[in-house]
Image (tube, rainbow, N blue to C red; front, top):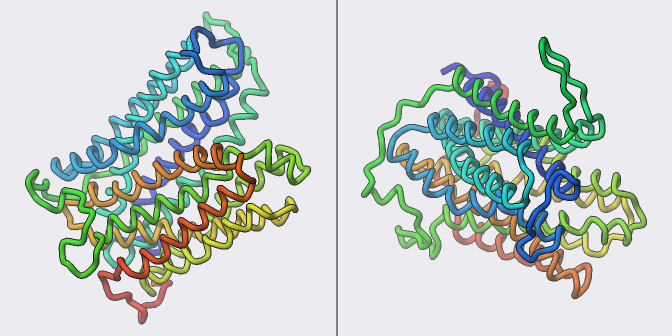
Length: 424
């Protein structure tokens, strides 16, 4: 298979599909809190405050899809098919996004967000497994980095576009025999459904299932191990990479729920907080592809280890910074650390996986990352009462533990091709 700068063309197509889907899905991060606070939705709140309902609705996506990912990943291994799982997930995601336009009660939101979480469980591990299947051993890092870069572009663009779509509403729609007014919320929901539909078309037309044999349901390689079966280390290396991904995600996410406190502490507005939050994503977008490519030539472990070391100070310092631009710099540096960890960790797990176990193996990391993104805000919301610096210090301590785990429990499984020209 010919590659474009070392990246499989089908991986680029899959990355574009995930970028499209991510734009619409991240739309909802901005749209749903505003929608809940509007007059369009009401009904019983299950004894919770409106703020609590908002938190539950937003958290449901990660809380539902993360524990399901190993099951869908393993099922894709056992069937030897990935594409059908991605298409099913995109169909459910598009349908649920469209259905938000009919919501009138809070329980409707709970059901639809749960359905979207289920859809995510079908999409996330199988797309990563597809990237792993389509990549070659000597370019897996570059393929993983490129895939993650496009996905993050979509994730970053979505919230910005969502605000603009809502503020520009209502819209007057005129079609032959039809004239109607569309609220900004309905337009946002229809757009989210449209982006998932675009992703569905891209996957349908441009992606083919790799020729892999279905895994034997009784095969040990399709199960998740905690302890190292070889006896060389205490912990299984893939499980260790999952734990490290979980710790990294917590470090990223503790910042997310502290907007009002950060703005007051640094005497800044919400725009600056948004820029600081985006600093991590910006670094990831700029660096994941080149770092992933570099791991193909210089090894995965050294980048993961260096990234975890860098994650410690860049996370801890956020708890004591009193300047807005220094906070942006810390978030950007934390993004550099994250870029050194996640894509190389996925590539290393892909190196370890067999042809019939990549769905199961890689789901460990994607599940762990999802749980970390959900746990970070919960930890910071509870711990910030003991001092602003406390959640950041705890997250930094976890990163330090992760550093030790990588150093002692993870090894390279392929020889880096240092003599090759990266431009080949």
